[in-house]
Length: 119
Image: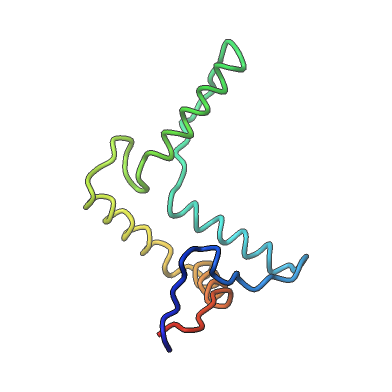
């Protein structure tokens, strides 16, 4: 089969729509959420914090979210080099590769993907 190329994502055909209110949709959403957490777990610091204002609490939350987004998955807050990031991704991939939910997610992606024209 020849490879199909597109000038932009907008030119690509979309995935087949799923049946509304299908119980399988919730199961799939939960397994995708679980996969996302396994690939990049959020680090929560235990304890209670007091803030003088709602603005101060909101700012602290925004800083926490930014710190989670900056930290490469599987590494400490200080991060690491490219080799560390690749090793962390490999390790996380191996962690989820044998999970039933991972197999189901991959099956869904294969069913939803437009593979016409792929080799």
